[in-house]
Image (cartoon, rainbow, N blue to C red):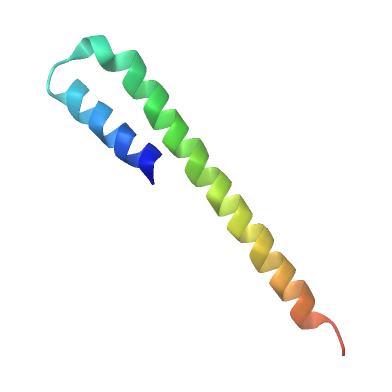
Length: 58
C-alpha cells in the first residue's frame, strides 16, 4: 500500500529529527490507518456475503 509506505517515510523523517514534518507525518499515519480499516471492512463484507451464499439451499 502506498499510504503505508508514505507513513513509514514520514515517520522516519520525524525520527531523524525533522520535526517540521511532524504534522505531515501524523496525517500520513492517519491516512494509512483509515485505508487499512477500509480494506478490512471490505474484506469482512465479502466474507459475510460468501458465508451467506454458502448457507443458501439450492
